[in-house]
Image (cartoon, rainbow, N blue to C red; front, side, top):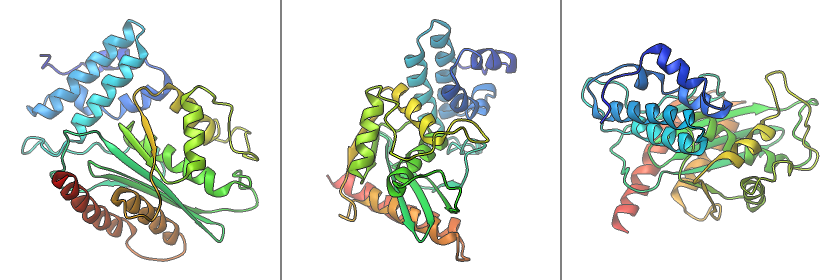
Amino acid sequence: MITSPMRIDEFRAGIALLPGDLVTRAEALKLYATRRPGCPDCESACDSVRLAFSAASFGDIPAAGRLLTAAERSARLTSHAAGCGRGGLRSVRGVPGNHGRVAGRWATAGPLTAATDASWKSRICGIGYVTSEGCWGLRGWSVDRHDPTGPSKVLVNELRAVDLLLRAVGRPDVLLVDSLWALSFLHAWQRGDTEHLPEGYDLRPRRNGPPALVRLAEHVAELDGLTVQHVKGHSGHLLNEAADSLASIARRSVTERFDATGRAGGLVSSFLSSWHQRSAAA
């Protein structure tokens, strides 16, 4: 078992071996990789990051991605040692929106499951995600005549919700979406058909780089081990209902004044308690 932390120069050398999408994920794990707090969960994350860099040095980028996923899972555990203060991986800097993690001893033995959703009304959009380990995020905005979305507004925003999830907390084991149309695009990208994009979506570069869905398509094509499944919306599926509610909170927060972060945290805590109770009973 590797127990020593990485030196800063060693970490930077490892980062240089990774492709762009893995660089962002590894940077979010820097504190776990370069400090030794005497916490088994943090040490496990550190070990996985070191092994990810080793895999990348041999050119095995898929293995590096899987090892970073293992590091992210260790970082998100609620069982961090007392005084560690690191339980719950924080959102990557630069990811828009509000992000958080609710406290609770959620089960971690099963697959990490996430749900995403979007809400659209009167030129105002909200997107949200939630994971079975308590991470959540939301983002809301209004559109103007320069909106690059195109005519497929609901579809594009369903996919933007997936992008928000993957950028903020990394790859889950299972991703649940309630849009069959979005599911078809995600499956096409997994097959490598990254040029398959919603009709009318503006492909011109943005100020901060490629369009979100172009970046998302390439990211999904490179992900190993991601299972994308359809779940019927408004059918009582607790993770889907939580994601739907987060998207609605995000949309309403654009025009209404209320504590969106506090409301989101309370909602996620309630839904996840019920989710894990049902899972345990099953």
